[in-house]
Length: 226
Image (cartoon, rainbow, N blue to C red):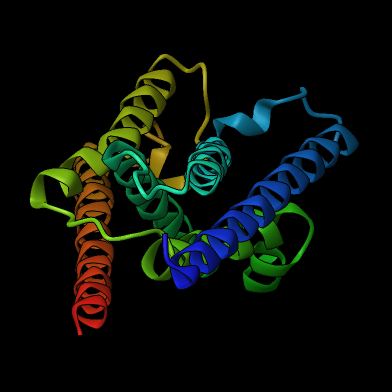
């Protein structure tokens, strides 16, 4: 393994450790916030944002494990499935970031843009973790070609969340937690519109991340060959 590759792997490990730490801080702060409001512990797990960040936490820990193993064994064979999982994580977190900025903040949820992006656990789960995960995946985490099949697979977590959330809202077990999930407070056609917009948006985001990742991978390969 070349010195430059070892350096990149050390940076990848450090960045993913930082990401994992920020994810844990965000979880702790979120749980404390809910307890201070007198809400049931862990009910914040209703939110796509928190579930996506927990997904990111486990993926970051796994990446640290595989990259550390590579350094110890002087190899470069992080499983491709690990990189596809990280792609899925980045798509979920990017969706969280963009939906928070351009949908939830304009709707005035939790006081608007500043509280949603910069206060308490939101600083970590809405801003820092999505950005760190995105930048790490694009610039550090190895060469892997993302296919259209992978973009479809990356939507599975979003699809599962949507099916569960809508079902629990229909059963009146959940209320929301997002305004577009208020199935009994809006016309049926609006629920269908939101479904198309959310899933369509998730797919467009995955295509964007795919494009940037593949451009980065191609550039790395050309630089190495050069």
